[in-house]
Length: 354
Image (cartoon, rainbow, N blue to C red):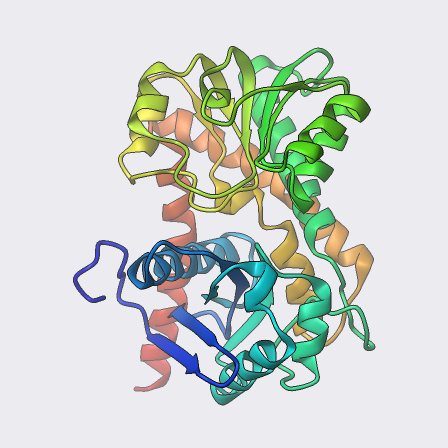
């Protein structure tokens, strides 16, 4: 693990194995400089244990930067449950995983992510208080996906305005890759705003439904990133923005909900050099974590959450403007802004310790 390129001085990485329930899982805490590490719980069929570890490492680091850039007093963490989501999320396995989270004594707070449901979080809430995104309780925030979709939509409009001078999406050709909970809601918003949609999803009936209800054109997932379009919105798994994409895709802007969209860190610079305007993924998809953070704080206020999510569009515009002024890739600018806040918090801790 220490030798993988995805290890970034993580504070704590925990492996969990429960033979009785069949649970195999990993919790990665990247940083608690700003507060407890908050991040989603992902359930996925990984090709290997190392692939799961690398995903947890990358995602947890991304959460540190996401929470910092969103202005939350929370650190970054992520967890993954290995296995087919249809079979790996038994009540026994989820309870065992909740007990593992509980043993961390609040250093990590889990929430819904790919392959998980609000009902799963509700079940885990019976075992540990260190989960958020539940459907019951005084401060329950429920399904975070509408807030994630709203943040991406606002970030996308800000990106389009920065590129064209207007955020009007009428007749804009937008490709949405992945029609899960967030991708579908984003596609609906784009359709209502007048965009022409291209969609791809491994769930064929879902793509067919998008064609019927959103007048979308169905495109093969491998082909979609290289279609002629104004905006590409990756909303499935990460790594879709490759060197090949940066150099050859005929698209002007990228703004989507998927985490870790850059296949390698150098793609950020390649996109900038190619004139492709990239809205950093962990910036625009922070709406969901803003929502669950309010629940984790014990006082959920829907109005304040909505106002906080609206700041995503403003921050996107500011980052693009800063990138242009300094001729720097947008991802590098976002990283620097997040890192400055994290470093300041770390320095305050050192000073307090004397």
